[in-house]
Every structure is written in C-alpha cells, then in structure tokens.
Image (cartoon, rainbow, N blue to C red):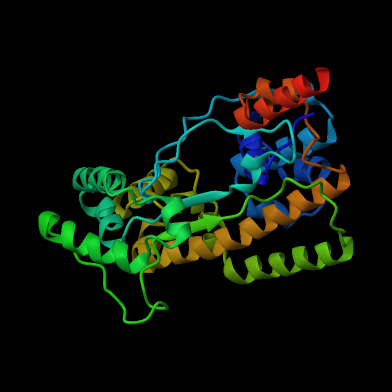
Length: 332
C-alpha cells in the first residue's frame, strides 16, 4: 500500500495525460466532468483536461486512456535559500517520519528577489553567494529552531555582508520583533490522513453558485470573458503579453478583443483582472477536487505502488528502510 501527501497527489495529476481527447467542449464538460453550464467558462483547455484526468484517476474509469506525461525537472526556486530538489515521493508507511517534516526553508530577502526582473545574471550570482554564505556560517534550520540564530542576527549579518558589495538595498531592521523581516518559513505537511471529513453537498453547490456570480460580475462583457482565458499570461513581461495578445487577435483565436482596447485598458490593470479571475478559478478547482474525492471515496492510499511508479513517483527511502528493519526484527 502506498500513501500520498496532498503535494504528491497534485504532482501525480500533473503527470497524467489523456489520450485521444483534443478539445473539451461545454457539452463534454457537463456530461463527463460536472453538470453546470457556467462553470465550464472558468477554465482553459489545459485545466479542463486536468480536471477530467483527476476524475478518471479517482473513479478508476477509463484509466487505460491515461498515459504518463513527461514533466520538466523541478526548477530551483531562487526565492529560497535552500535549493528545492529531488523526486516526488510516495510513502510505504503513513507514520513515516519524513511526512511530519513539512517544508522548512529561508526566504531570500526582497532586495535580492527584485533583481530577478531587472538583472537575472546578477540575481543568480547573489543567490549563489548567499547560499554559500549560509553554509559557511552554519545558518541551518536546526539552529534557527533551537533559537541559536534569529531574524535579527541574520538581517544584521546580511546587511554587513551583501548590500555594499553588490549595490543592493539593506533590509530594514525593526526595533520590535513584529516588524522584523522574517527569514524562516515552515509549512506543515497536509493530506497524509485518510479523507474523513464530512462533505456537505448543499454547501458545495452554494459555494459554486457564489463563484459563478463572482465571475459573472468580474467578466461583465464578451471582451473580458474572452480575455479571462489568457490569465496564464499574468507572470510574463508586459511586452510579451502585448505580442501574444496581438498575435492571438490576428490569428482569430481571441475574438471581440482589439489591440486598442488592450492599450487603453492597460497591462497592469489587465494583470489585476487576471489575478482576480485566477483567485476565483483556484477556488472552483479546489471545490471540484473535494467533490471528486468525496464522490469516489478517495484516501491517501487509493493508488498502488506499481501505478505510482508508472507515473515516475519514487518510494520514500526513509520509510522503506524502516519497513525493512521492522521485517528483520519480526523474523528474528
């Protein structure tokens, strides 16, 4: 039996591709994903296929049309001091120590993060130096948790080491702990317990209706409805956004939108619109996921090991070693 965290469950869905489905239209969505005309418009084609894949995985229906999709290796997130690497894992034992570790790291200071937009090479160089500095100084998660180092110590040392050398701003030091820059981040692992919480279907429908009303208010014209499908552009630079939209208009993919409207509306305002739309969409996807899990009685041990390894999830080394030790002790 294999156990998944919520993170590894989401990664599994990302690795699933559905054969022989080119496009999901509104009727297909109503018949095979969720019977609601308006909810269909929240999602682009990639998101619709992910919803369908999740439902297929949980229901066990038509799994033969699901295939492994190669995903890019996890990119190093330069916003954190400790590099994020390694395979996505499943666990043999729900009591595995690794499951309680969660995510622990240190944030890169804001003056460093800002460089990613203005000077990528300089940004990478400073990130590398800060990471080496943490190692040389023995600034570890364990020492932070024991109170041997704290935010004030890290900030004071950072300000004495990096701003002058790299011509970046210092981190402001507050006189109180509340206003101090928080270096440390910890996120608890979620989802290892079986799904036991109750599901209120009527409450679920009420929330879906509220989201639909919210999107209807936000996308109050055909122009905005069509532009909402391009919310995936939100993190691109302004010039790339303009070029992508212009090309989509010329190719006939983006209807009832003109370059003049985009220019007058403004890219920053458009990004704000996309962010609001993404917030509604994320809530809708979360609600549908909870509905699928409830409908098909999902637990963290729904998938077997062979199936997970077919999708390139790797066994957790720690809990498998513990299992081997337990088996050896039992056989003595």
